[in-house]
Image (cartoon, rainbow, N blue to C red; front, side):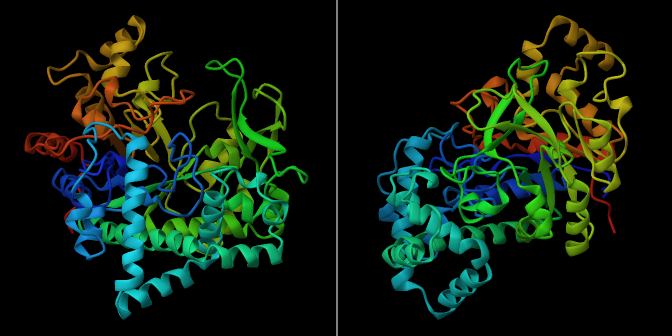
Length: 502
């Protein structure tokens, strides 16, 4: 659906300042919401919030619905009496500007396990009732997720398709046995989800009261090694004997990659999903809308047709396009949940059929300014080519920062940009592109916080196809200055994106 004229900031919660080595849902998250409100922003966009595995990518989660326990605030657990100051007495020497996951993960898991044990013995009747109610309401995904994670721990982190055959195939007797054997471990994973969603709900409520809506992210595919695939094997293309993906997702060779991108996720059995009235997808959207306000669909083109690569291939070269029933899917979701607040990530080589699917449901597409100046006037990323029903970014989490991009751009690309702008302002190229985004006709403009701060490539969040060093960037509290708030507020107001007084 088309959105009103507005703007917001892209920032993943792991990037918040925190003395615990990784951003969390504590006091700095609330300070960021205050920054958004005071600078007249109306959106906060986050990356997927699920529990991450190897590589720490939010786009490779163990669950399509669960929250990342690493985002739980230890300070809030202290305020509840579930942790003590002694637990924080010997904090590791965390780096202030990045997340060192090798340090953070064992440290925070230790705190969460201690808080869980204290919850068992100290929780009063009200808390116990809330926890039981949470487990009951979320049982349709929580039971499988908690058992999956407990089993993963018991198997040394190995992927589910290598577990003992009876558990891998979810035989009833084996499932009953492991549930009894792992009762304490299952409780821990349920407790951390309860605490994550409790803290997240409080933060979201604070944001909504401040006039800030949260844009969440749905990756089209789920990780093969996830609770979703293990518990719903009938809707994924899997090898019946090994449990591995028989058809893998990716994108074909293009200008940027001679061998394409082989992601490894199993593609969906869309025929089976359609027989089930897309129940799994409806539930997924419903669950997302419980804790965010707007959904950004990653790799939207895969709902019209998807690139499928057979098991055993080492690259994405030998795949094929297969049609997907995106039209029927979104009709079903619309019928069940109403008109959807959805943004479509429609980057890459997009066909008329993909555009037609996007436009039928009035989903805004994405425009990225860093892609605008490398070709001719027909480039759809140039602001004068935008439709109103679009969301413009200076860059995304997969791009370099604007300063980093400009520093490495070709002379020809720089010349095109400078000709378009007239000249570079004394404020710097990042403010020129922010101004360009905010002044465009696109209904929504989203700016990564790194660009507001004017950071170079050191502030980059992710470099696609690079395995290490991603998802680590953090800022420090003093970065969000009064001057920065005023500058962003003035531009937002000037270009008609400030909240309308009712």
